[in-house]
Length: 115
Image (cartoon, rainbow, N blue to C red; front, top):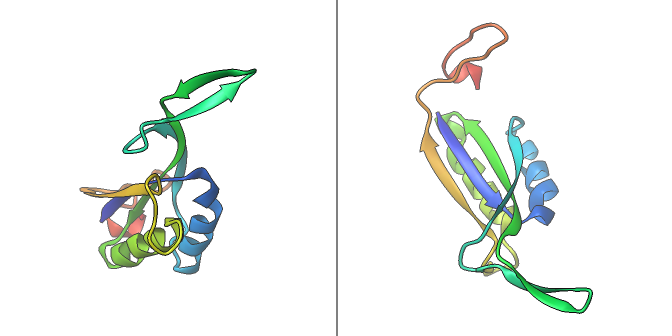
């Protein structure tokens, strides 16, 4: 089992969610996040005054998948979340971490069946 953590642009959320549903990945957690990478924030104007916004709004997805779903999950996120053919700075990142155990609270089911 693996934990796929994906940090995306907010406008990409619904298209990524829909694409994951089409490949039968139907369980995920969505979190609002703020941060920056190579973008280093951006400059905005409010009531005529310019200011630097250091943290940008992002969406963080957390998806636990069985090993046989890992590659199709990652590939789907990359294809749908990328901006244009080449992609752009700020499109996001994906992290894959091992999951030692999954336990379903409802009935105590453990392991891959709990995912």
